Image 1 (cartoon, rainbow, N blue to C red):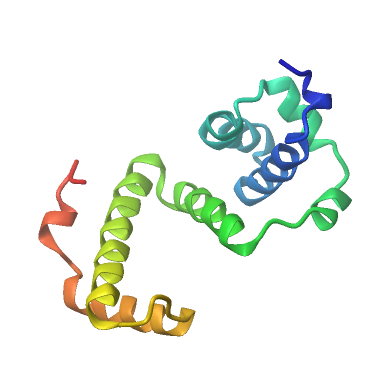
Image 2 (cartoon, rainbow, N blue to C red):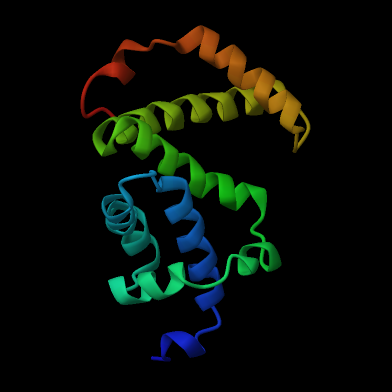
Amino acid sequence: MKKDNENPYRIYRIVGSKKIDGWFYEEGDSRRTHAKAYQLFILPLYGICPNSFLDYRNVSDELLECCPQPDYIEVSIWLPVVLVKLLGPSEANRFSRMLQYLVSETIETIRETHSERTIDADALLRTLAQVLREKVPAPDLLSEGSG
């Protein structure tokens, strides 16, 4: 196994860790928010030790500009971070399952109604809004432990 500083994926872990830590950070409670960001996201996603995380936080922010992530990856990491920060882990899990159900329903609706293989983002958003109007609140989604 290579040492971390020799690993070609190190840069992705640094960028991801710094972004997650920044999104989760709260002014005036830095020690707690850094620790929670590490415990809830960094460790499960990247499997790095706390010392590596501390080292990564000290890497220059210029790296974030040099190595941008595609939006579809950044948003997929950003969303759970802000959900957990806003709702807490349990409610964020519950909301994520609800959202997963609604997006699945949207994809199924698109497959049934669109003959094209792909659609654009605007059409996806319109279909999601339609599904939301039809499905929310779905009683079976609001029960604890469904999914």
